[in-house]
Image (cartoon, rainbow, N blue to C red; front, side, top):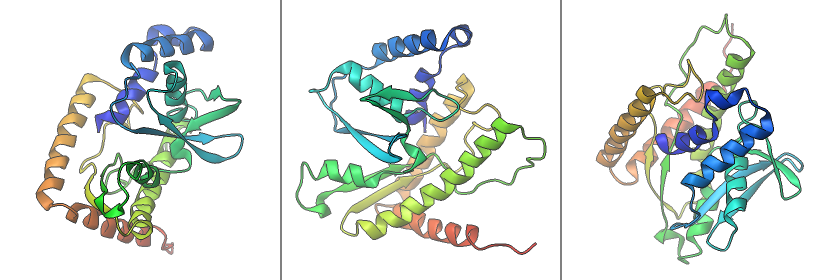
Length: 244
């Protein structure tokens, strides 16, 4: 579960720079990203970003023909979580995190695979999720605005992820959906949202390895089928109003 959070960790400037101007902070982040990103892409990489001007989802394809600085701008735009990270203006528009509209973009991954193979049955999809199997009950009586926002993201992301799993099976019946790896325990983000302490990172690495081994143990296709059925049950329960 550390892959996605690694990029967010790079994007967040250290405390020593947080008192500086926004422009200085942005320069720092771009310089730091340039140290880690060589733009020597060895795989077909796609980025999803939300276009704030058109209220649409835009997809960026990263390859060796693109300027490296442009790739960094697209990376920043696709991970610009509202409130926590600044929006990214480029290509005459403004972008924020792609998850504002789409949680799991199976469609773009499948489209990139079809650049290599013609038969959809030759495409194998694995999904790594950052949402747990349940949204835990919490006492939110003392929550402030920021914690309420993060709680909202937890709930909406949980619902969107399960919806995307169900729709993937319905929209792409010929694709081989192999494994779904999802956290079996709560990720350490509640007390410090998007925090990246050593203990939290180590915890996510170990948990990811354990859950991946469990998915493989269940068997090809079976972990995905199990996740889809579980998602259907979750959505039925969540969308059934409870009488108070």
